[in-house]
Image (tube, rainbow, N blue to C red; front, side, top):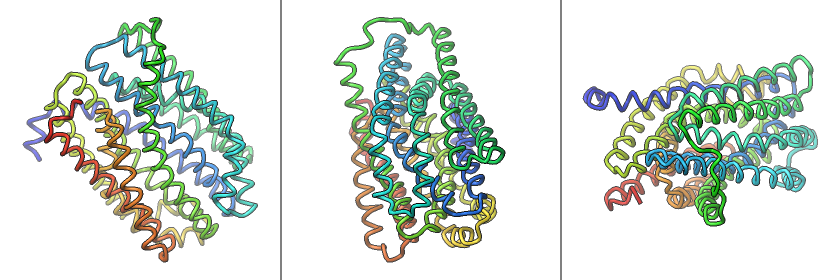
Length: 444
């Protein structure tokens, strides 16, 4: 290990300088989830916590489905940056923002139908549905800002401006946390307060992100005022790439949503428990995503430069640091998992039940490490079809297949399925990467 660190010291430093700000800012993302859960979890009734879990899951499903905007933008921008094609950088920014706005307004137009689907799919009690509706009806109007923020963050990441996403996420999440506490605790707006906090924070962040991108573009001499950035051929190429990433994101979110909706069918306490425990997975995912985001930019740049050797070097460095972070999280959850649960809620039945499922979360970081990192690697390579195919296989076999076999285990069966799903995603992506490398197809 020492030899590997010493030989590639400059590369390790470069990756960490890009990943470091992302990791620090990503810490505020699960912190936001912790604050949301904590302020609602202390209102004294499980239906508040279950309601916001249900409403937030639907919003997360919709916004994470739009994650193709960030992924495709990062990979394409990183490759253009590697080629030093600044006109392409300007065109990608405009086309991606246009696509983000189109998707956002479609979501708002369909919000009425989506709201009715919440009741049909969850089978929750009337008390829980009232809170879920209240959250969703407010939160959906942050879609234009939230989706454009994905594009702006990805563009800054693609040109290796790690501080930009750091500032953006920090502003978004700290603003959200402060407003969350003020609206819910001091104004007693309950679930509506948490929703309004997120909406306001997203629009404040959007204005701030535009300022950062315009400032960076001027510094890099990127010609944002170029004409000819919009054409049917260019839009279709972007849509084709995003189609496969969208399918991949849809299947991923179906698995996570199944956790929430099936938990709701088991019972209100189970739904509340999974809302608490999913914050552990958020902590893991966003920490590892700091490394994965950096690998997206580094691998994309290496592909733009036409160097398969540099692509593989960045893969090795990313996996090295990802494994270290995953092991650290396993130890952290083993030592302090029970205390984190108590911090999130003071409802005795929820605490007792959550502790019984804690062992699944202790080992989750190691099971999930490879899938997060290789997602980033394949984003940098813009290998969207491979991401789609491995996701379909992993969901059918690792998640739904395993849950079908162990459905009698109820919520333990859900967590077993999630663990197998994460592990299989990583293994299939690794196998595909090795296949591409052996066939000298990494740069295609």
